[in-house]
Amino acid sequence: MKSLIQNLIRKLEKNQDEQKAKKIFIGFDGYIDKIQRAVKAQHPERTAFYKTLTDFSAKIAAASGKSGQVEITTQETKLGGNAPILAHAADCLGLDVTCMGTLGDPEIHPLFKAIGKHSQLISVGKPAETNALEFHDGKLILSEISTFKELDWEHLKKKAGLEKLIRIFNESELLALVDWCNLFHCTAIWQGIFEEVLPHLEKRPKTYFFDLADPSKKTINEIGEALRLIGQYKSFGKVILGMNENETDLIYKALSEYLGVTADPNANLEEQGKYIFEKLNLDQLLIHPIKSALSIDSNGNISLKGRLVAAPKISTGGGDNLNAGFCFGILQGFNTEETLILGMATSGAYVQNGKSPSIKDLINYLRVWEKEVVL
Image (tube, rainbow, N blue to C red; front, side, top):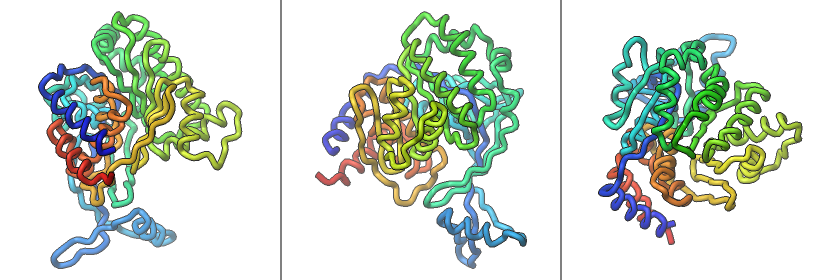
């Protein structure tokens, strides 16, 4: 692992001088996020917060049949959504980004202009809103997403223009389609892209990166149809599906049921991933638990341990930053081990420092990680 990190640092240092910005398209959501902490007690000199979801859930449970009040402290109000956070992280790494999403109407909300100097922003509606309660062991995300109800394929074509979509997709080397679970008409949007945009692209093949996000509120049939459509994109290029550990378990069970197969209750994460990869005819499956990252492709499985940040400054958006680092590595032509490390390091630096890293920040984080690795 130490030698992998050392070699990656050398490549990134060289890449800083020689890098030609790669084009990436990202769509289609957008949120205003309030990053918050739940107050457990107020002391004269300090505020004590709930450290874990377990402690906070006990407070909520105690109010059942009665009533209760929880004081909330907002630490930051920032741009949110899988697409904008991924776009901002990709911009920080120097990629040429086009982000299309619900960024404001009639004007783009000022918060999204922080995505960066390398980015073109295209808004197709008003942003959703999220209250993200953060704890040391996870987060509770409360979202108001009714604005997404009007975002369907016809609305997207009307707001963006079909010819413009074709041109943007044609110019982009990697296309990241994310947050399927919260966009009410996302499958129809992806189907519209597949039927009305991809056949008209002159520059092929492309790399298509998909992230469903947490699919737990979707039906088995909805999940199955979205997964089937993702597999069809392979006729136009390389298809990569990314998911965290919880999403992997949910998708494994849903896909098994959709295909009429009894899921193995004892299947471990790697076995679940292999099943998903084989059934969907993917080029690559990326799975990112909190402490590691796993890649599955036709050459086999590669799993690498990550660096756990003990006291995170922020956790909301960690997965999107991992996706950004991973996609950056794909666009630079790095090998699988390097792309996994890049993903974990981009996420780790973001969680540790509370902001998406530049290449310089990423190199500094990797140097610290390298010193901590035991041979």
